[in-house]
Structures are given as structure tokens and as C-alpha cells.
Length: 109
Image 1 (tube, rainbow, N blue to C red):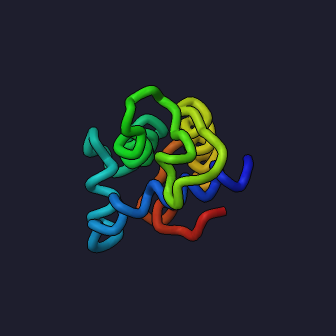
Image 2: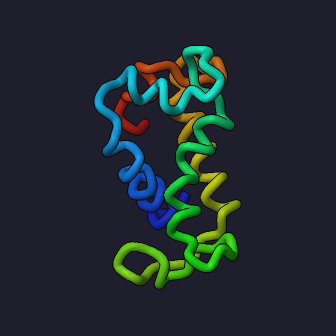
């Protein structure tokens, strides 16, 4: 995973995460089906929110001018999806295919 993609993943999560008050709130917001855990699709939806907002022309590519600081390498939505899914797999400490509250709030692995 390249540095831009990793940095973008962290940066993109900040606006949504900034509104979360505690671990339970974080889990509730991401857990769209209410089963007490977050699956890959739920995680993707949450994490792609900022990408989609930043993609001002809606072409599925964050061009340098759409990125913070107005520079960097272009990244496609699909590239970002892959970065997010890799992060999900690393955060899934118990390997059950879902993230619980502890895994969600753990430092990036």
C-alpha cells in the first residue's frame, strides 16, 4: 500500500470520526444492520464517505487538486476501496470477518 493511499484513508475517516462521542457511538453509526458488529460493506460505506465528498467532479478519481493540500498522486475509488479492505483485514484481530467495538477503536495495525 502506498503512503498516499494510507494517508488518504486516515484523513478521509477524520470528518466522520470527529463527530463520534465514544466507542459505542462509533459502532452504532457504522453498524447499519444493527447486529453489534461491522462487516466489510458497512466499513467501506463509512470510510468512502469522505472520498465521495472530496471527488467534486464525481469522476471516481481524486485528482491532486481535490486532495488536501492540492497535490499528490491521483487515486481512484477502486484503489481506495482496496486500501480500506486491507485496513479492515488488519483490524480484524480475531479473523472472524467482522469488527467489534474493541477492534474498531484499536490503533491501526
